[in-house]
Image 1: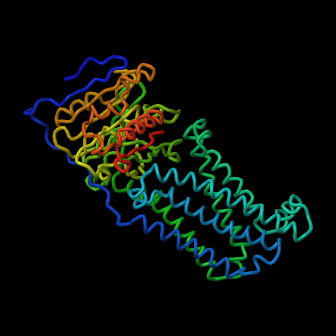
Image 2: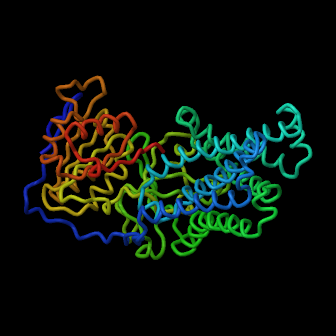
Image 3: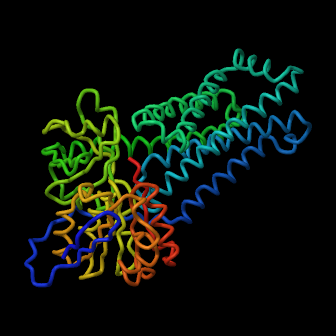
Length: 475
């Protein structure tokens, strides 16, 4: 039964009575392979490299690093260069979308760590530049500006290193939240392509003038190995794997359906989808293989649980490129990177689940609502929208709820229309929607403001943090 829905009202859709005949089962796509990599393995790898880098630096410098002020400055610059370079390679691995990292930590954590690592990387490389220039200036009796100009003009690849640092700073600045909000995805993506040029320029400088490389064969082999691992993971997972999937599945757009005023769904068909490993809640990076589009990839979520018949992605018009998706021609071939994300049924730890969605965040939640295993009443969905017209997939959600015995609550209205008495994210209301809330897993996806309110309500309801799974849906 669906209650009347009006501004500022919580409307609950209860399961239909038992006995309704369900349609035949859907054959879902096979789940991704689970990798036995633990957090201990990752931390141990990082710790070993930190120690090895320090040990090699000490072998080259030893107590001479503290001989005088000039030696201290130059040694500090060297050490910061080494760790800054290591952070560059770690950053590269974090954006390589390595499956075992993605499954272990999920997109949100990796994105947050990537942002923090980028800040640390830039400060380390800036520190290297400052300490090195100050050290040589003290040794040569010059002022720092004159020393910097002289190094750029005379030392091999210092100009390349300066350009590399400038590109790294540009990438880091455009990744800051205040800048990211003002940039379109297309601009942000284009700027980030320069990070590969920065990596190449930094590599040339490092091996040309780095004292740890020019006279130490073991160090050169060690660092070349780190570069090969990072670049191999990047190209293997971001280029080779998508090309292999393109050749195997030959996915094409067969239909585009309008879901609401600004949301469309792409239906993709291809070959051997019984071998395409994906789960509800994941997303892919999509390249439309047409002139003007093939070089750009955009992240879109599965809005239906991936199955062996077809894949469905849903897109909201948030920018020029996403708005133009509605006009992609049927038959257009697509290349997918991924699937990515740990916001999947595999994250579930409890028998009962509450799903919370808002805005276009309903796309992965709708797929989870379809695929999550559960008995009658085990899964509840709270869907926040401004009006009935803004509800995407409502008929599908109601049909899934009726077929599986799940519960849906629609929270409709503007933010101002909700008071403390009827706030859908108040702890008391969340408990009423999903009894036994602190014993459930909770999946949350939607705009940042909605997620902030939902997470605050869940914490007030004393839901353990390891029961809360969320993904910031900002694409």
